[in-house]
Length: 140
Image: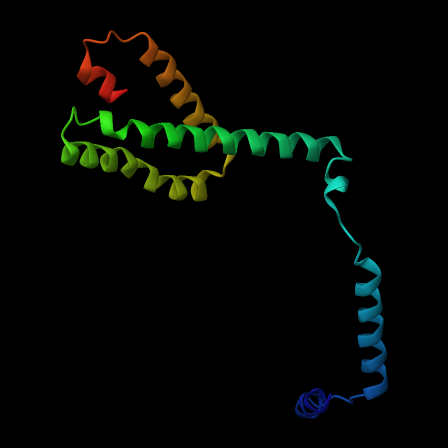
């Protein structure tokens, strides 16, 4: 409060200590009245939050499972050569480093839609590639 008095004196204003104290107490009471206990059940009361929570969980599971499958399949990329497998596994992850930049520019919705659609189409296309086409299956 003493600092506020000094600031008011420098600015040429009249500082009234009692009024400032009343305003501060009023603000504290308003903040304490707003504070409520929140639990997980309240999230499922509204339909929008239910849908959003469900979609976030599904999207995260899909992303984690795709990455898990990629990591498990890394040893097959190099056709038996450990160094080649490691290099190709690291090379595949390089485009992922640009995703935070893309999300910062475009938001989450459209890049996520595009990337998951592209990966889904690539997965379907991979099912139709003959086993003999090693290079094509590697590029998909």
